[in-house]
Image (spheres, rainbow, N blue to C red):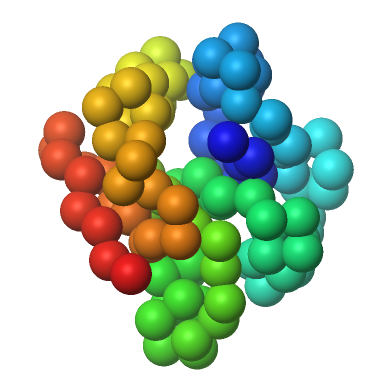
Amino acid sequence: MKILVDAGVGKLTEEWLADAGHDVVTIRTLDPRMTDEAILELAVAADRFVITMDKDFGELVFRSARVHAGVILLRLDDATGLQRRAAVAEIFTHHLDRLPGRFCVFQKGRLRTRT
């Protein structure tokens, strides 16, 4: 899967995704100051799924009706890098088929999806 990882998700998660065979591009290495709008535009142009911890993506997708190729919002306040990596591993191991084109929220060990 082609993935764009937002700044703040963490290097451990980025590395796990790459090691799992995904095509990973990171905002951390491109431009950590990139706006959320620009991140979505980049993701759509490259047909990449976004992984973020930024709740503003929900506003962009639902209130502003921004086009996207799929988003996972990790609601993991105060989680360590290892906990974020474990959450993403759980999502990609057990729910990969539910992700493309959907807005997903992972919180308290559960994944909710919307189209």
